[in-house]
Amino acid sequence: MLNLVLFGPPGAGKGTQSQKLIDKYNLIHLSTGDLLRYEIAQGTVLGIQAKQLMDQGILVPDEVVIGMISNKLDSNPNAKGFIFDGFPRTVAQATALDTLLQGKQTSISGMIALEVEDAELEQRLLLRGKDSGRPDDANPEVIQKRIREYNEKTAPVAEYYKQQSKFKSIYGIGSIEEIFGNLCIVIDQL
Ligand code: B4P
Image (cartoon, rainbow, N blue to C red; front, side, top):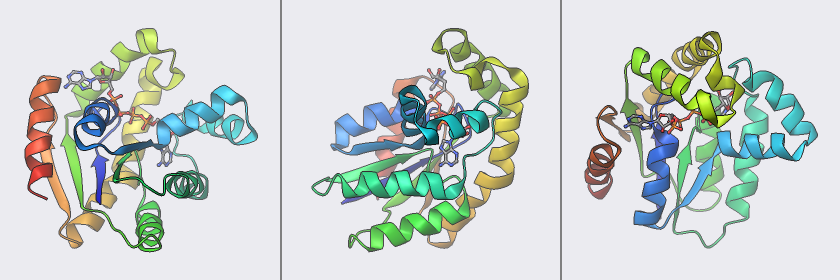
């Protein structure tokens, strides 16, 4: 099985590249951001609680996202592999993911980080906020908060994968096709 973690700060292009990678490698896309936005759209209790945090740029509690990922793994027993997009975002989520995959006799093949400077991230998210309807993209203060959350809570996840010799990184600025090509080179070497 090919199980990839696509890693990077908010707006690095994880969702954009995941869409292309699932087609090429026949993988299931698991985006915790998309799963949470689905809950919000459905008006579930989980969605209502998550929205309050997401609109402020704050991470949703670990147990909520771990539970969602666990359900998705269970509901795709015949998958050839998964792309984890926006998950794990904390070291606790990373260890929980390892445990979940162990239970299915598989593991993470590699983690690939998209490296993008903060100024570019802010610009991309503000641009998307103009027509995405995502409240967390429209406000520069919320974007700054998301980047701070990333630096404080998510960046240490890279260390976790470095210790397992599963960390790779590529530069995330350039055309979408160019970045996709570089990602494929790294994936094909895993
Ligand atoms: P996510 O939905 O994961 O949001 P993201 O980090 O903004 O997305 P991404 O990096 O995928 O950016 P994209 O490709 O879309 O999370 C939203 C919120 O949900 C979090 O803040 C948190 O509150 C919560 N959450 C989610 N997962 C969680 C977890 N595991 N634990 C706790 N809380 C969690 O790209 C952004 C923009 O850039 C797009 O407009 C795109 O078109 C553009 N772009 C992409 N590539 C480009 C390129 N090469 N050049 C120019 N523009 C590009």
